[in-house]
Amino acid sequence: MKEKIEKIIEKIEEAEHIAPENKPLIIEKIKEWKEEDNAVSEVILKLENWWLEVEPIFAEMGLV
Image (tube, rainbow, N blue to C red):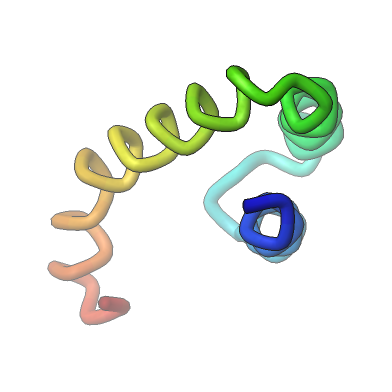
C-alpha cells in the first residue's frame, strides 16, 4: 500500500493540471496521512472518487 502512495506522490509531482503551488501542500498532506493506517484508506478513497470525476475529461481529450 505504501508503494502505491509513493506512486501517487510521483503522479502529483508530474501532473500538469495541478497548480505548482498546490503540489507541495497536497504531497505534505498525503505524507501525513501515510503515517496513519486508517488515513491510507481515506486517501485512496478520496483519490478514487476524484478519478471518477476527472476520468471522463481525460477520456474526451484522448489521454485515457
